[in-house]
Length: 72
Image 1 (cartoon, rainbow, N blue to C red):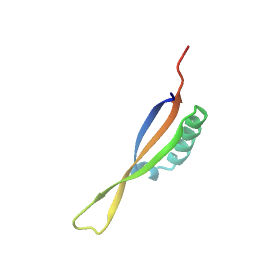
Image 2: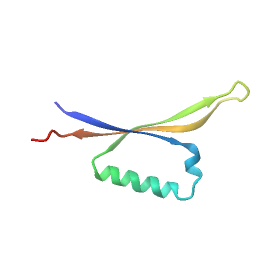
Image 3: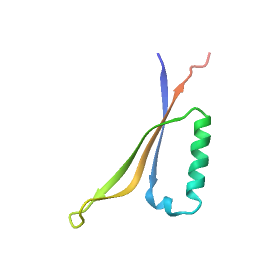
């Protein structure tokens, strides 16, 4: 039976305002992809207010997985 391991990230939206963050994130995603990590879910974490109509995205929750190989 296949077994998997998971990598969980939470990224605050404020990080996306930094000039270097997009490049840094791209480098990390490329590295993890080459290590066998597959992005399986990315979901916005929202907050809402009684005084505001709608919701505001504050963070993103990201899940990666890769197959876990048993050492012989």
